[in-house]
Length: 123
Image 1 (cartoon, rainbow, N blue to C red):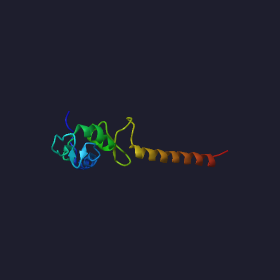
Image 2: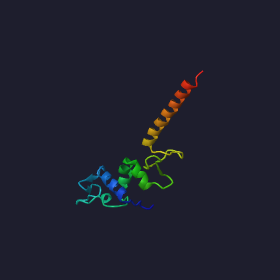
Image 3: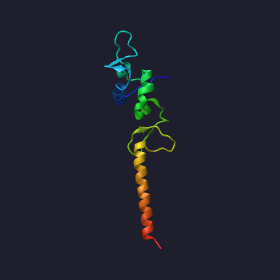
Image 4: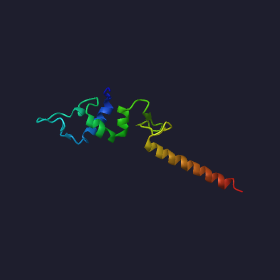
């Protein structure tokens, strides 16, 4: 399995996430500490070197996780905002936040049309 390589914006997001890791302490990794301090390798690398980070911390940011670890076939871009997301079905077109907003907008249009037809075309 090859290591995923991040671009600069992805690296910046991952670097912010590194601070959420339970093994991160003042820029050092507690897991690699064998008597002397060792710099957290994930905070200085453009690839996903730390297995703990990949398994426990990266899933906290679902969009970043999808961008970095998934194949192009498994990831989609939202038609509304352009954000990367993991679709739950092959028909998914919008990210979860946009899907909710668009569903509400379409429902309101449907109800408006239904109301207009019932009041103006009534018996």
